[in-house]
Length: 160
Image 1 (cartoon, rainbow, N blue to C red):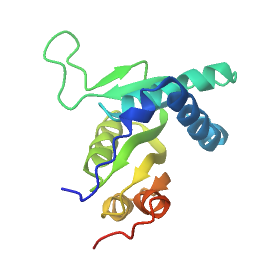
Image 2: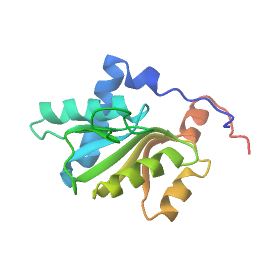
Image 3: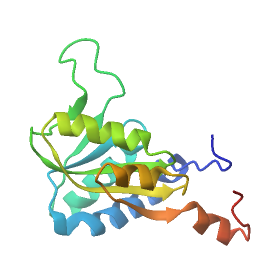
Image 4: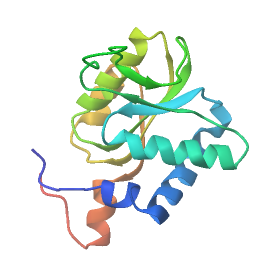
């Protein structure tokens, strides 16, 4: 449990917030030319869609995908929803990283699908070990902000 509650859904589900997040992340990943963007549901869903819409409007469409926490119980019984071909080169997104567990679950599912992870991006890194855990798995985490950015704006020092 973290000392700080950061609700990125207030931003990612807001029209202006989604547009800004979509633009920020698209600008960071467009040179990579990924074939998909997404992550573990629910935090990654609005981020992936914001980037997908932005990419389409910029003439460089990147399809979004969603990774379920459990496989669908009927029909295709898929872990991954969307038009993500096996072996695709992808970007993994997350709203807030604390321990890195959700991000690593997403990476594990994508690797099982044969995907190559080009980049791992989060809106906020809480600086509570997630970056290091993801790094130990061979991937580096890039975050738009850290908890320290928000605490600094509020004039508060982070508690150990």
